[in-house]
Length: 234
Image (cartoon, rainbow, N blue to C red; front, side, top):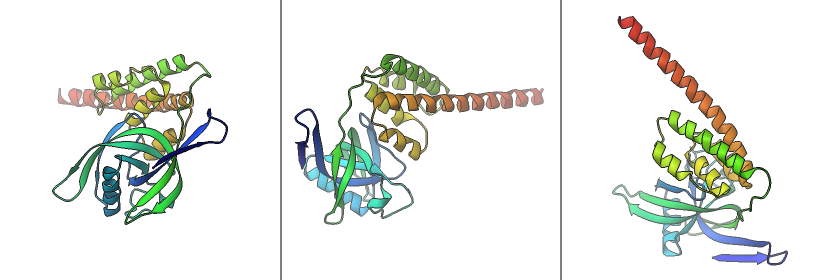
């Protein structure tokens, strides 16, 4: 169900959606992001089935503690992501592999217990237009740092990542990079909670500076290790 109302004329329309929720362990889904994962818990499977029967829209939010098998509303972050289910495949072991695409940030305002799963009323957060600060300069700095990060990383494909960040929209740029950062769930959740795109980019820049420094130190240590091994063999 999708509904919207305006309290201050047509310029400030608040949109709400009632959607089945799937709590995620160790994953934060961002808008603009394609994410595959496996669903195994019965409540999550029922939530997925409900979404597939309706309009294939679902609400995804990270658990505060990944070890909780049966999380209640207090165990799940209120800020999450409305997503479209792109594909779903039932696996031989009964689990379901799904591919989702994040659409919008949203915050849960109400929980409803359904037949063996939860639905939430989520307030969809409008994407703010960015007018303040040096938007282009900030975007350029973040892309440059991300290029260094990808070059030093052994886990990210350079060509694919650089192609992914060739975008003009500061919000999309921030979310694309945030989705690929190899950092903890709390840090990713923090980035999801920052609504203003430039503020999010500034935070990402500071994370990237720290991560690039760490990777450079790791490289130097590995290089020294290789050199000492070579000299020992002589």
